[in-house]
Amino acid sequence: MLIALFAFVVFLLLGMPVVFVLGLTGASALVFGSDVPITLISERIFAGLNSFTIMAIPFFVFAGAIMEGGGLSRRIVDFAMALIGWVSGSLYLVSVVTATALAAISGSGSADAAAVSSIMQPEIKRRKYDTDFAAALIASSSSLAQIIPPSLLLVVVASISAQSTGALFVAGILPGVLAALGLLLMAYFHARKAGGQYTETSQTFSLGHLLQTLWAALPALVMPVIIVGGIISGIFTATEAAAVAALYSLLVGAVIYRELHFKQLRTAILRTAILSSAVMLIIGAANVFAWLIASEQVASRLAEALLTLTDNPFVFLLLVNGLLLIVGMFMESIAALLILMPIFLPIAVEFGVHPIHFGVMMVFNLAIGMFTPPYGITLFVCSSIAERSVIQVSRKIIKPLLVMVAVLIAVTYFEDITLYLPKIYGLVK
Image (tube, rainbow, N blue to C red; front, side):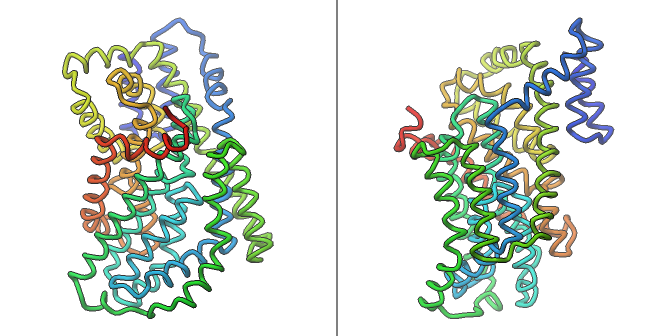
């Protein structure tokens, strides 16, 4: 195991992509530290990808890509503007509402960040809002796509932990909604305190306009209901729900909105292929690493070490949260999940923590890592579209970060936030 640890650190310091770090670490451990044949690598990669649950990922990615090219995103923005465009700091609030709504459709934080930033930033600059704060707010709001179903990370958790994808999806709803409400309140009071241009609104509230935009956005807003409702009712599995979501978004964009043409479809297919293949490569390589961890009994050894350090579940969860917040700053979310989940989940279960609750907690941690420097993929996307440096936007990340950490603490220590809805629908006992 020392060889694997040394190789892992060296490859990371060399700046090698995570997928190669995971694969080469496993290969190094097999070649120099065991008698297991090297052919095991290909076998474990195939075993990691040979999962019906993981098939949901490309379908959800495709649905998100179609959403942007088919006009679904723009109509959701129009509805959000009609709903709260008359409130102080309206553009901030619209950004959060839009990102949350898109999170319930796409499952991809980076895609949501790009869509919301592209639509909102021109108006944000025109009305002289704080561009850096707006970019930080959009980056943090877009990270909710990792928590609110259909989350790609929750699909990965289901494949690792052998838990129900439907139960994990439903468990992520309340934490995601709480985080969205927290960001909305923070943005509202931030705007009220600043005054000036934030008290100026571009429109007054009109029930007729609200209903008009709601009617236009309704086909897009129905998608989360179809996905989650179909899973809860048992009509289809999570993977089948992903395929239904892809087909539904295709029909809405091409038939109802009539904005999805061959060019947008081609772009969506290429984007889906690129992103899905990158995710699959990481999953396959990480399965080699996970096998190495299991064969060396790292989880049981770490559990023994932690039990000598503390027998308090409160302290254990605090230590895990601290570690994940740091890891999320430097490592891609799926890779971090694939490496750490097999280690910590058995220990958490031994401490009496429900695996569904623990899975959502880990995903929430890594969602925060999506907008914290230096890695922060949504932070990079939002700062790039806002034409600001990552350092400039990072200076305004403190308030959104405090909100998300506060919700994380609540999710960690109040189990019912994650398990209440799954229990109601009979998805967990």
